[in-house]
Length: 296
Image 1 (spheres, rainbow, N blue to C red):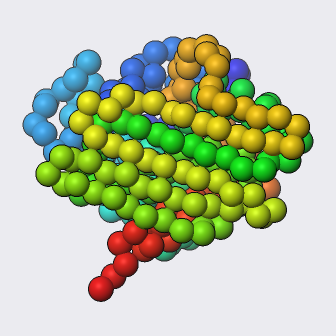
Image 2 (cartoon, rainbow, N blue to C red):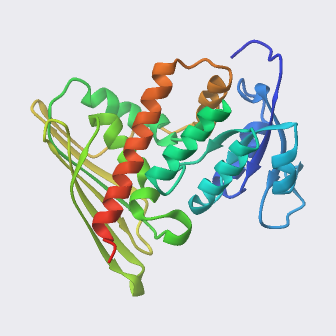
Image 3 (tube, rainbow, N blue to C red):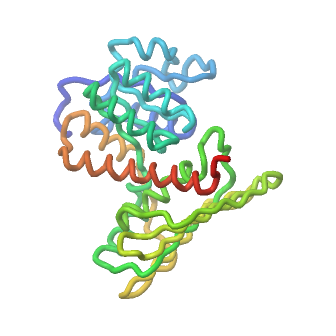
């Protein structure tokens, strides 16, 4: 990716919240992957005119423009599915912030559409590019898990915008699946006190070797964003995360991966393994939702 690019892919960023703003910054800075990308504008429901010298363009123009070849979907999770479908149907490559959809079936359908159109569909997972994950991956390799737990606390998220907690918290599930392989669901419960904006989701999972894993998401006003983990192995245990350094440029690292996909630098096996993991996590999230909110 260090050679001078023969061509640049025109990019629009859809949604300019936290993630969208970081994406625009990375696209404007002289990085190896940014050299292959040309930021054409951003799409937003708000009338902003321009931001950081980047013009606002309409969704219709972004979809119809021959110069726009790539869409970064950085809007609220509830809108991802519709945007992905529109941009794939318009013949564009798509990078989307996780979760790509709020249902396994929709994700499967969109992947089939991307393959039919011959386009890259990439779901961002910056949590796998964090120093903490690299540390954990080294720690667990070759060890036999006896049991484990992962508790995540944070302030509340609106479910209408960000999806059921198993979807809005899918990065934690992705950690567990990436560390311990495919998981099966044993049970899931949801405790809610809407008047206090309190929510606690408790999920009991099992590895293929029947080792139990507990995943808890707890949200309430004033709760600090924090991860507490505990993994017990036959050869010792890991309680909580040491300070392993600052996460630098994780969205840029994700963009590097996306550009490698655009340039055809990933093998079919690597792409298939990633797709399998993403769909497994989305399927699990959907099953957890069904357990916690059975349809009457």
